Image 1 (cartoon, rainbow over the protein chains, first blue to last red):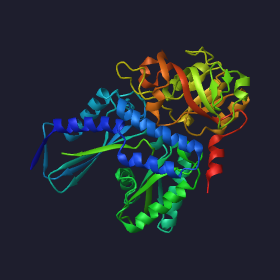
Image 2 (image 1 turned 30 degrees about the horizontal axis):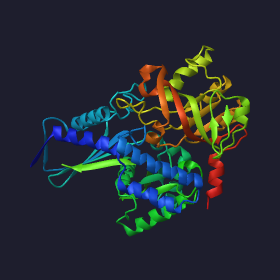
Image 3 (image 1 turned 120 degrees about the vertical axis):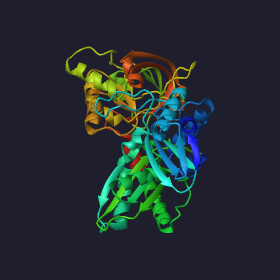
Image 4 (image 1 turned 180 degrees about the vertical axis):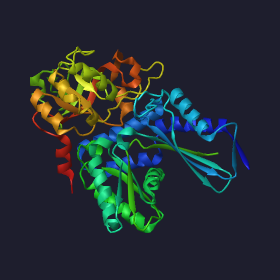
Length: 280
Length: 189
């Protein structure tokens, strides 16, 4: 049994929240450079250059990359031989979010009730997904999920008869309707299969894979590449000003599903793709 | 006032006149100099009942530009935190009424409704795009920030910004031009 005190969880989450908002991951920076090499549009190139500068400035000055410092989505892979001591796991995570957002000068963007819409003041609570896994380690993955792109995320229950062709059409339709609103270049997380909620959660988790890395399933890898090419032929471009770089990546996670069903959830993520992880 | 510069970028200094607005075309790159007012969802939600009741607004919108943004908190010693645009379409419901009162510009990111585009033509207005997600870079163009109204809304309060050479692009002009549609058509393959 591995004892983990809640204070180490809080400290870890606090640091992850701040670091995610200040430092884009290297795979994103490489994506900007790759796109600068292929983008035909002058306006699009200029946007990409400014976004690179933005990443640099955010890192050096510890200003958030985007003022929308996001809803904290926290994926926890909790080893079944871990014993959390000193309090509750979710309370510890939320305390880390609260400290990180206040001490890091990050924006509080969460309202307590979707109806009366009063801001909670410290960006809590997080959305927390816990998977219990084998082992004695706890992996915490934190994503600061922007609202503008989240608002363009979509879900569709396809029929088995619509098949792979239906999935392709739907994903491209999601890129088209997200258009300039979701701050392209985009990253798409696609959850296919499972139940209603399973597909949605998979679509979020799919975003966490390293950008540009191959999908471990060769069939799905080919599908991702085909969809990315199609998305980038739409012409939306960086910020929607027209261009070749509409999406940096399309990541698919699949799960077994019912004989009646073909659920497809698409989480739309903007270029402010902010996530960090730690293993305790 | 709008003036051209040798680099092809137009200098936009509010207040703006009908003639200023008519000179702007979708795709024009601009630098905004002077005053911007910030307002987003919650502030618009408070302005709208005032407009409907014919009551005065917390600031005179005539000739001005509203920037759709909710900045992150400033670090001690800084003027402001990150301050990029939010999605304009969430303010679609309120924009025609503000244009009718003499507002000349709005600035955000993302496409606007047909009703807003029609109102830009009818009342002579323009929709500027700022680069979404470039909040850190855009903070460097802000020289002064003061709260004008609704301080209780926190990041959503109405703020008066003084800006220097704030970079933007014309998305929708008053002649029906739309950079998003034109740009996409140009690069679709």
